[in-house]
Structure formats: C-alpha cells, structure tokens
Amino acid sequence: MLKLISIDPGKYKCGLVLAELNEKKVYEAIILQSELLEDYVRNLNNNEDISKIIIGNGTTSKEIRKKLDFLKKEIIYFEEKNTTFRAKERYFELFPNSGLKLLIPREFFILNKNLDAISALIILEDYCKMKFTLNQNIDFKTWRK
Image (cartoon, rainbow, N blue to C red; front, side, top):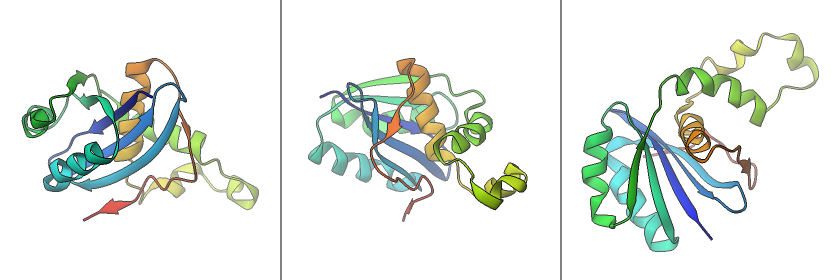
C-alpha cells in the first residue's frame, strides 16, 4: 500500500490529508495549527507506512520541510497556486447540496468553512493526476489543537 501525506502549508494553520494511492482513497483530512504539524506527522508515521510527503510550494513550505526531514521520507514540493480558490468547487463535489439547500447560493455554505484540508487534497490530486474518494464521511473542517 502506498500511503501519501499531502500538506497545504500556512503560517498559522495547515491542511493535511492522508491517502492511499492504489485505492485512490482519503483516510484522514484535518486542519491543524502549524506548530503542531511536526508532532502530528510523527504520530502518523508511527502508525502508518508513509511512502511520500507532498507539500504545497507556498507559504512556509521550506520551514515545514525542514521540520519533517527527520522522517527520512521522500518530500516533494508541488505547485499550490489557486488551490484555495479551487477548494470551494471541490467542496461541493465532495459534499453536494440537496433538497432546499439547492435554492440557496452555494457561496453561502462555505463562508465560514476552513478549506485547507481540501486544498491539501487538491495538491495531492494534481500531483497524482487523479481524483481521490473519501473512505468514510470525513469532516474536512476538523481542527486539531
């Protein structure tokens, strides 16, 4: 099994997804404070056989790579331009509106959403050149503090 971590880096918070390449499934998707990323990835690595880490090449990506070098895993920078913008559309692909919600403009439903984990998913999908599905009903807004 090829398990990958994808990270949408940020100064204060990061989006992270854990996915399995052969199954094309996301097993975990979270948003966490940037200072907690190193410990969180360390714990993931202890429980999962991580093959590769893909980091968006934007804000704080170099600092995050330095923090994760201890893993001795392949770490790849990948283009993250417009992923936050694209995450809004991908959100509705993953969680489509139904019923009366279809009558309300979609933008209303994402005003208060943190889309960093979906941005991390988009980075992963762009890198792998394929779409991933969710293994279970994952809440992409989950905060780890």
